[in-house]
Picture (tube, rainbow, N blue to C red):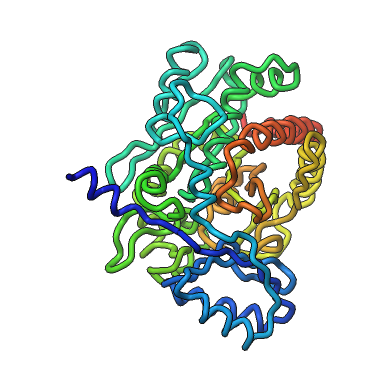
Length: 402
């Protein structure tokens, strides 16, 4: 009976639709932003930010009449991008659980953690399991350190900070496996001249919740009155700004109010002198972005990061024609505060920091079919090879770091 009750509580999204809206005036952008204050039935997959940038809005069936009325009032053209969200959700769920860890399906938190443990047993001289932090519900934030020789400069990889972005942990795990198993000369060279700190799921409570209860959950799971969770990528103690508790982008009650961000920030501090690159993986939109998110000003080594980003995006496009846009966070998507890459760059002056917004551009959004995991991983790996060749050519890491 208990199993039945748990199953009955799983959120379904039958006949929920996702609309693509393109605002053409500032007034339209502002009107769309006002919808964020209506959490019941409206959920932005791509938030309204500036004129001409796509807005993707999921609308519940009971809100469709209101949606059509609002669109008519504002006078914005729109189109249906996803006819039935639940059908796509069903396609991302594995039909039968794989007995081994593969990249043909998405995996649960337990399966990812077991694979990290298995890799440490399989490569005991190269892979060390690290518990970087803990969660509100008592889970570990588990990652690995991969090292082929001592005193290598480090690269930190973060995945899964937003729970519903399943392609992020999947791609991070793909990269990890490539670093350990690929025979490609470029991959071997990249792998073996760095230490790697890899955490595929920064938000384990949220990720687990997307598997058991609500596939489209984004935040952590700490309650705030009637609302639950904070956006773990708005909660870092750098240019932090408060937002409304029920919002999808609620920044928490204060910087590091979430134990996930607080505990991971402490771990990062303990190794901050050991890595010179920080990579954060998200979805979706096909963007490669560098700090800052809190300002459109071009600060620090902006020119280097832009040039490296262009080389990386060009390499990523080669295999499957996937096009990424390159720019700083604030100019490319929207001004946002308290995010990890800003924190790492602003607090520790880590020279290289990028956020990947992985596939796609909205046809599937957060519900990317599992047959795109391997292509996503392959093209991302290609971009990393190009990225670190260009980074090296530009004299990073600077010798005074090590």
